[in-house]
Image (cartoon, rainbow, N blue to C red; front, side):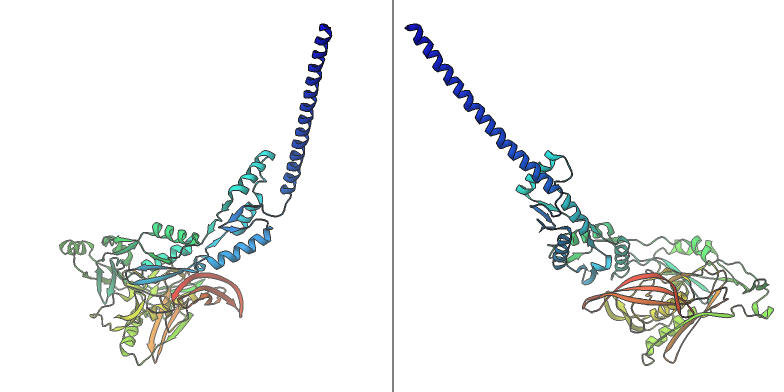
Length: 502
């Protein structure tokens, strides 16, 4: 009996253990089935997401929710939202002056398509486990993609340099000009320079930050010092060896005489050393007349008119007319040799009372005011259009802060003594001669030389990119025509003008 009891007890234990094992097995099987379902669902979901054409949940671009959108839908949404939120311009300030920088002017824009393409690739670039982990993480924490901002750095540099050249206390470099038979060298004056890299960084940050509400940026500046007067360099530019006029028959060409020019460099250096802070220094020029002139060989040195251009002025403004006449007289008859660069400031000279210049309207510090020599920019503008039409290379040219009354926007050329010059290079293989006149309300400039081969009809044509109540942006093109048909065009500039006066 005891043995039977022992047997019975052991049996119960075995049965209980067996029962527990079955329950555990069933539990394991159920768990395995459940995990299998989850894994299978995850795999199915994974492959579904991998082939999905919409952006996963939790993805933002520049703070804009693009979850569940296709590529096209996301591009449209982000583009519209950013256009609505972005400032179209930024105001740069210096002292009491304001300068408007149009975002469109420097072609600033976000690379939205690349950002959307990246958004579509989220949780789709790794293996199964990496992508699933990334998917869940983004779903819980969200992700914000910052699109890349692109802009035209050359256009921004040009705009900021133009501002620097028009600051109220701008730098005035030492320079020189010829007045009758005298060389006049002027001392430079300290001026404000712009910390370009710092300002550019601030501007780009302001454009990137679409929540940027303060559109006013103070221009960071430092003191610029003019270059030291280099007498030897001036001598190299002025010096000419006297050359007789001559002609060739094959090909036909007449070369005008060259009058020799020289001056005593050591004497000028002594003057500068004795009076280092003088406003200007003068010295007589030595001229050598060639033995044979064009008149002696009886031929016309500049037989062909290559180009001409005219602008109108008000004859009732007597003082301004005087300034126009003086500047016109200075450039009239100037001969520019092949490869030589013409400088308007060096030919016209410093605008002074002693030289006969009068007070007239000028553009200064972003405003119209009265200044000595006002109006001579009309002559530099007329010359600019003539030399472009004569197919010369423009070396240096800047636009006014406002559109002048005598010319279309994009066709002007402003000059300021010591800081802003108009320069062009004679890229022809023959000398040219400039003629200029001011009379009866018309300022005219013509360029003479020798026509060779195909001569195009060239003009400056402009296109307004944007115009607001504050400013306007204009592109200028050099357009080549032959028999009335456009053969090609070259972009000359992109100019910004204020359209209001503070």
